Length: 153
Length: 153
Image (cartoon, rainbow over all chains, first blue to last red; front, side):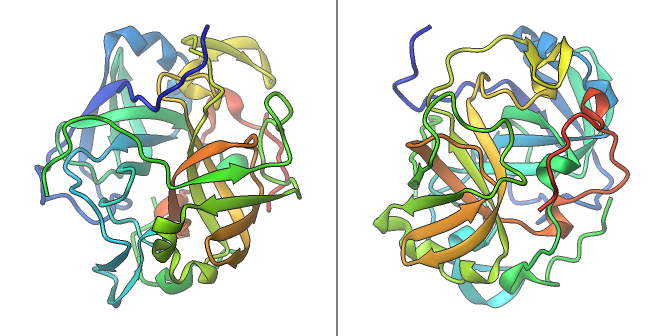
């Protein structure tokens, strides 16, 4: 197969959310709403064995993102901070990243909780959440230290 | 500003790696090599305050990825598993995701360790790693349970 020469995205599914634009929580962790993730039928086989995972990582396209600023104010501080030290949806590449709990799978439908996406968000990728790959110890979270008090789930 | 109507990616930088294609480790966690991440000058202001974070999340474009299969064999098991339960670089959207240790910043250059990218990989986004957002407890890692024994860093 040829190498890829352009940065072209092909969504693998779509997120059905109880939230419309402007209504989603700032972070999904700790929230109990169930989201229905529809994986397009052509990709269903790639979900084999996913039921064994309690948590998965979703990367989505923040389709309502409109441009960006490099210094941003967030709900967590009155001072502006560098965009890449925030989780603002307004970024050069509007990619959303969430670790969610996988509650159930029915064929090409995943039911998850702990998400903050709005309805109709295109899903780009799913990765298994594996503590030895995705967690670190001795963390310093800079200006965000102690600011995001989402309930651990 | 207008809404985005297409899924167009604009890299924010480039990863300078000691590894060429085919040489990178399967997972970066636990490895000591230093990678030099060059953030393009136009985005440098977005790094303000990043020095306070011990770990950051990098999302990159796996530019050497060539197509994909929905069932894949990995180094961790003799049986094939669904693509979305693996971290294979060959995916419909070839997005790489790594939590790395931020060792130093010099203007628009970030020095990091714990990565597994090859030289020249386009960087799409940086997010702060925040345990209350990015970590979960009571994890079941499906068929990957106990298979990836990367040293925790």
